[in-house]
Amino acid sequence: MADTLIDSVTESREPTRTVYRFALTRPVYGYQALYENGAFKLSIRRPPVVDASEPLRGMTIVVDPGHPPIGATGPTGLFEPVPTLAVGLRVRDLLEARGAHVVMTRTTAAPVALGDRPIIARRANANAFISIHLNADGDGQNPFRDNGTGTYYFHQQSRLFARTVQDALAPQLGLRNRGIFYQNLAVCRSTWFPAVLAEGLFIIMPDQEAAIKTPQYQEAYARGVVDGLEKFFATFAQ
Ligand SMILES: [Zn+2]
Image 1 (cartoon, protein in one colour):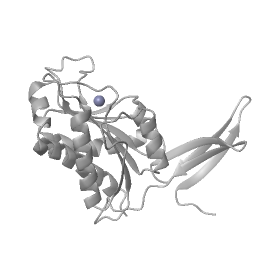
Image 2 (spheres, protein in one colour; image 1 turned 90 degrees about the horizontal axis):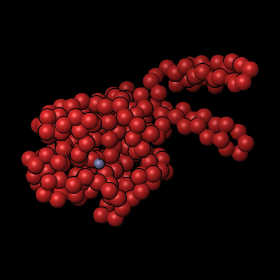
Image 3 (spheres, protein in one colour; image 1 turned 90 degrees about the vertical axis):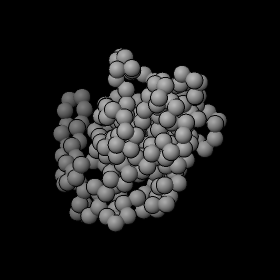
Image 4 (cartoon, protein in one colour; image 1 turned 30 degrees about the vertical axis):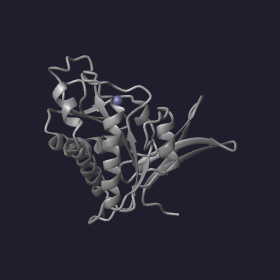
């Protein structure tokens, strides 16, 4: 049967392996490889069907408020998981208001293991996964000189998503725009759905720690994330 996503499949047998090549008509949205009932199964995911006037309607989005366990602490003792949960809950409300189906990895202060977070998203058959964090690590730089807003991705198919989130989030928060970063982060390794991790600001900077305590700045963070998600899904509208 003709498929509009897969253009061609070729097989080449080599002495120690067989290579299958899938040429797609569109950039890959997601894929998953499983060994199931004695057979190797590769699933290639179609992009979602998106309504241009309401790009978030019907999308399943997993919102992951970063930590606990662990998490960074600001100069006056603000613990990262407290504001990330407040932001995450606002993201949920704003997404639901735009018609999305939201699954939270946590809604309380109780710890959720890092490895369980992508599993929650896989079980939900997420169309996208966003993890919300506050930075404390200067990536080898002095954070007093290099701080602001950054977004992280791992797989190529998450790069556009990282870009749309970063472009929407940085102006909302009004800090230095650090751009997008390629990094091998546990919550960004799933291949079935685009996944990014936002580091909206640096909790170890006294002014940024003070700002994220306020509902207004939490709202700005949430709005940036939601606008970025909306722009990402809008790129799939026919
Ligand atoms: Zn964090």
